[in-house]
Length: 234
Image (cartoon, rainbow, N blue to C red; front, side, top):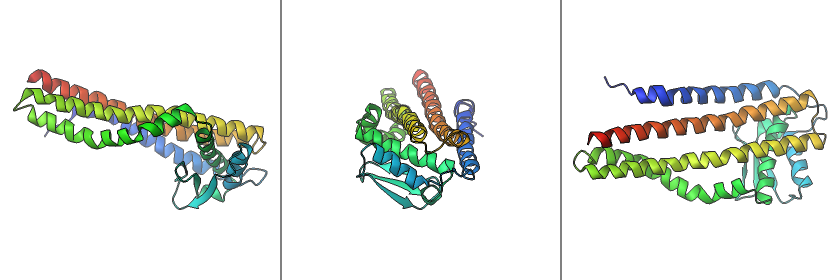
C-alpha cells in the first residue's frame, strides 16, 4: 500500500489547521450571536449606516439563504447577508455585516489589493483548471520523454497563481475588518464588551483565510518536491 508521506508531513497539518479554523469561526459566531447589542441595531441596519456614512447610498443590502454566506457582490453592487446576520441585533451580526460594508467601501475607494485581486481572477481561474492536468501529464509522459517534465513544472506554476490570489486576499480581508471595527466604534454602534465580541468574530473569520493559504503553500511545496524528484530520477 502506497503512503504519501509528503502529504502527511507537509499538507495534512495545514488541513487540520483549516478544519480547526472553520470550526472556530462557527463556534465564535455562535457564541457572540447570543450577545445582543444594547442599541438593538440589526446587521442590515449597521451595514446601511456604514454605507451611508461613506456616501454609498447606491449599494443595496439583500437577505439570502444559507449560514455564513455573507458577501459583497461588486458586479451587482449588492451586499448579501444571511438571515442570521440581516435580521439579528447580535454583536456577531453587526461585525459581519459591517465587514461586508467595508468591502463595498474598498471598491468605491479603489483600494489597491481589491483592484489587483479582481484583475487576476480570470488568469487565476485558468491556472486552477490547468494546473492538475498539466502536472499529471508531465509526470506520466516524462517516463517516455524526460523533457516533458516541463509540463509538470508549468502545472505547478499555474497552481502558484492560486496562492498569489489568496495572498492578495489577506490584506483585503484584514483591511475590511479594520474598517468595520473603526466605523462601528466611531459611530457608536457598539461599545465595550460588544465591540470586543464583534472583533473576535472577525478575527476568527480572518484566520480561515490564513489557514487556506497555508494549505495551498504546503501543497505547492509537496508538488515541487514530487516533480523535482521525478526530474532527477529521469
